[in-house]
Amino acid sequence: MRSELEKLIDLQITDTNLRRLKNIINTADQKRADIEQEFEQHAFSIREIQNRRDGLNSERTELEKQIAENKTYNERAERNLKHAQNQKEYETAMREMDALQKQIAQLETQVVEKMTALEEVEKELADRADEINSLDSKRAEAIGQFDAEVAKAKDEFESESKKRSAVFDTLPAQLANVYNRLAQRSRDGIAVAEVISGSCTACHMALRPQMVLEVKRMNGIVTCESCTRILYVTQPAQNEAAAS
Image (cartoon, rainbow, N blue to C red; front, side, top):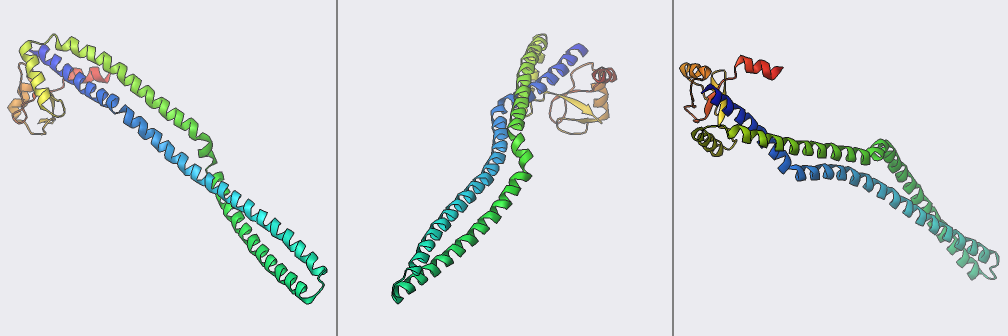
């Protein structure tokens, strides 16, 4: 019976590991997408700043173009003023020059504002230069590391599945049926639960001292009075082997 109990314990450890590996594999696509999304958010925030910089540059260029055009018009108005032949032409040229000079002053003020805003944006980009320059490499590294972990989980899942079959096939049919029934009934897939500090680790109920002794002897199958799972206690020799 001790041998069969040890097989059940081994089977439970293997099944628990298989559940963990299966969860890694089944959620891999979503987690990979989450990693992509996280880096995309960083990239989007950087692109947003870069677009703001490009927009400010375009606006400044357009303002400077308008200033240049108005200065051309102002030069023409000055020529008209010099060649004015009557009071009306003189006043018209003066009004045009005055309006153009005011407009040029307003446009130049706007250029200064754009340049000030542009300096702030450029500083923000400079502060995030390391992040910008390393973003693609960090993304590739994170994705590569994650893909490697998933590939490792798939390989381990395959080897653990073979190990499970080898152990399960050596169990008596009745004991195998009991194990399957208990595992399928529980949400966590636990059919064989360890006893720690006198309590079942599956349902956390305290066991009677006599029951704990029976579990330690490993002379037969002992089930928890609360959750009916098969109980076991890790032996000192097993602990030393696991540590080594």
